[in-house]
Length: 313
Image (cartoon, rainbow, N blue to C red):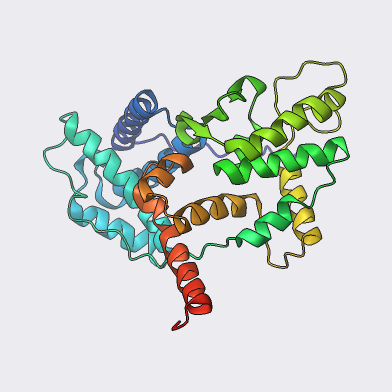
């Protein structure tokens, strides 16, 4: 007779590990109620806390609420030596949020992350476009065709408002106020914001809604604002391919993505004197430090313009 196959049975979680898991779950539930965390963010927070809890249980025999500053420093050194600063800082941010919450809830007496400093981050390199490149990109679609008119309206709207590509393809017709030239957008963490998009984008949207969308909808009544040739909502991947195609047609040789238009929106606003906090609100950034990555690009472009056009540049 064939030998019975052995099945491995996972060891039961220790009481310490269960206590950590329950604490993390309660924290995540509170964050979801207070901040409306997206599913992806909630899962990422949970993974970071679970890895810390596993290490604390195995190495120190302590649950997460008993962690000291030395424990956290040892964990970071043991598990994440050589990590990119952005990754290390993301994990530290999760730990700081957890222990601030635990302190507020009376689960511990002091915050062990209070003196932990983020890793030094190099200035992010932002790929953006000049205004002439954006203009060439916007003019690339063939607006005599329904799909080309749709693409022109999408590109105009994205550049006029700084939308994320996911926000663009998830727009519904009821989200857009053509009279006000403004739209309601649901961003990261289910945070809603109201965005203006100006006269030029409104004109192209009106043309699309009048001359192209009825052809694409083919008698149906879809909720999505931008439709593919089958009358369904356009996907992020399809819009990415469209941007690449039109960039080649416009003679743009650098590698770009839909996010490049968002970068162009922000840097061009700053180049023309917009306030950084206003740009932060338009982009939907939770932290001003995220928006500050654009100031470097804007300064470099202004330096180049000064050198090119000023008589003593």
